[in-house]
Amino acid sequence: MTNPTPTETENKHRKKFVLLLAALALAFVYLRNEYRKRLLGLIVLMTDSTGSIPSSQLANLRAKVLWELLQFQQALVTEMMGRQADTIQFGAALGGEISPSPETQAVAGEVLTNGALGVPFAEVSAAAMVQAANNISGMVTRSTLDKNKSLVDIDKNVSTVLETITNKLSNEAFTQLAGVFTVATVTAVQANPEIEEMLYVLNPQSDNHCSWCASRSGNIYPKSHPVWSQLPAHPNCYCYGLPITTRAGVESNQELVA
Image (cartoon, rainbow, N blue to C red; front, side, top):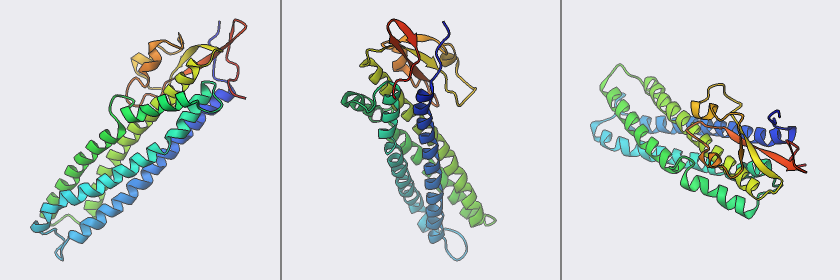
């Protein structure tokens, strides 16, 4: 029997989730640019007429940079959490629920609280901001000692640090939401008597897959199989389970939601 492939309706639910991630990525970039401006403005205010930050101000530099970055972190958390309800909706729809049941909402909602990979996004992002604050304050301190460094140079360095941290946290947020999507699908499937099995589908947006995921690609597992509780399997894992409906003993990939 040929393995089922996503129907147009099933693709619709998954595509909505992919578009949600794309919108989140744009929101993260917008916030990054806004906080780059705020950090540069902070540095400008601390700079004296010679273009340097007085030593008396350097002691406060890291604390002020960290405060701004923690505001940035909270904005990122808010953006990601704002996508949780839609992610649950799309995942539950793939699992056969026209609207998420209370159980699906509760179980999938716990993913972001506990962290899809064991550590909540808030903790991961806060730790990343502390490291970024150390990098930026250290870089600015060194630049003030180098009279050949201008504010343009400092801005470029700050931008590099923020771009690196935003890319890292974007990937982390995507992985966390992928976990929400999978848990919503699996929870909905558990309550659906017309679905007994699911097909392991590799992330269609990438050709670079880990050996663990690749070895399971195309396999059909019972809906209660522990493999589904292991997704996402690693950072940047967007593999998912495609429900297989069963009617009159015949397996098919009929549409789950009209």
